[in-house]
Image 1 (cartoon, chains in turn purple, yellow):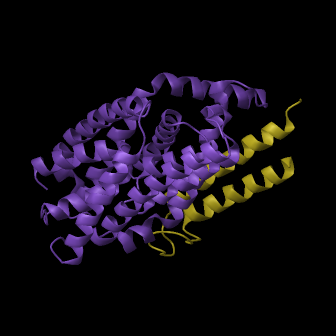
Image 2 (image 1 turned 90 degrees about the horizontal axis):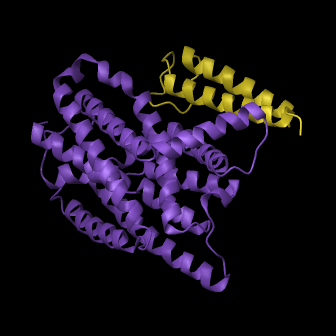
Length: 286
Length: 62
């Protein structure tokens, strides 16, 4: 992997991890489309490189939401010490994040390896990217239908039910499939649980932080294998680039979702997924 | 419910140890026996901790 390739992949990871367009799908499809056959996704140096990119992305999320995380962690500790739940806003958000993280963690360790083995090539990634776009359209349509027919109003994150939190977490576990976006699918689940776009995005990003950070920390041993040392500089620069890209992405998206919805990303996923699927079926990308 | 929470915590804790020692290998990447599945150990211990917190909420004075 050259320095240029590492930088492109890092920026791609930082942006596509938070934009609802699937980072995993893009890291499979982009090298395939550009013909980067020297990028071996299963090699030890590449796996170490990916760990650092995830660390950079997770740290960017922690920095962006630092004030909220501080308040949440403080409120959670206080409630455990007290042994009682209160009506504190940060505490309620914190416990909803804990509940939502459980299905992601459990399903992640059970299904990650078989899913990567089965679907880790361009054709399934393109197909799932297309499906990701359709899910976003369906989510937006269902939400409009819920509001018009059932008259359901938006509620803030702290009023989300525990069952709703669990369903957002379970939905996020679908992002194990390359092409299905972590933020996209959990935002759709949040919208269907009556969050507005801004809160659904915030809950999705807050939920992604411990998941990405834990995944990166658990994979840390891959950084210390001798083969990983050859990409040390690329990994360092890549981690910083991914972190900066992730920070700018989350700053943009939190503003964007104040007044916009998921449909533009849905169009992007359907169009790019369709093109890549055709190219993969014709054997142009492998 | 407190007893259930504590029982679950103990089960998760023991399962974590068994994964860590390589005695069980369900749902693991390699499926290889006698491999040390630290990820599974960590996740199971986190679940055990959450069960203990759940038990704490059940036992505190109202």
